[in-house]
Image 1 (cartoon, rainbow, N blue to C red):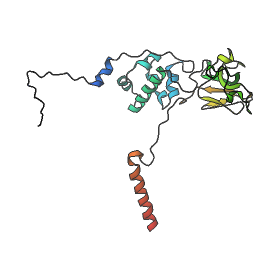
Image 2 (image 1 turned 90 degrees about the vertical axis):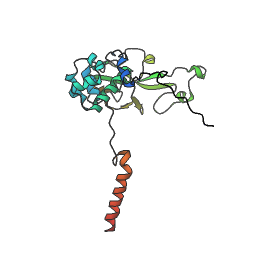
Image 3 (image 1 turned 90 degrees about the horizontal axis):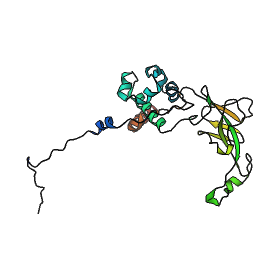
Image 4 (image 1 turned 180 degrees about the vertical axis):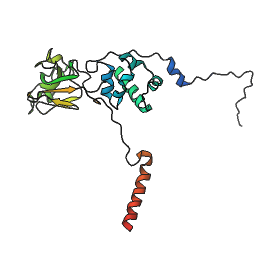
Length: 241
């Protein structure tokens, strides 16, 4: 037996209005404008840091508030082209709102776009999960540190010799590490002369936070097999001559 769904007549049919999901974005309240950070004090520094030539559009965006409130159509009217550049700007704008910074973004002591770093050594605090003791790895001595200690990189005021607070409470700078006994390594890190390797600086510059675009290899994923097959055919034809 075949069961068929009964047909609805025109009188009993109920029309449900269709709402385009794309139109819902206009009813979503805009998130608040984040505050500048010491490493990124204004919109010009932000555009310069994220790279991809966006610093050339700095004069088109009047203020920090405008940077975080302009919509994509408004950015298009200002002449920020192509569309992938606007998408990249909006992507970094949301990352900044969420507290996701590039190197130097967590530094509190910045002077004229320069953050100074220094290698510090502190005692490893006890771990409650290990019965208020330290791990065997931390307790062992190595060629570069004493037993029960750790080395990390902190941000200090420019030209200072020591941080402005207790070493145990200072956070380590993200994106940099201590290599060997006292060498600070990381992207855009410049060692300070005369510091015996214990100090380094990060300077705000064009593209320091830039997310590099990938490049197509052999025509990209969709055309890779075709391009390589044609290349092999051409090589085999050349060998057969």
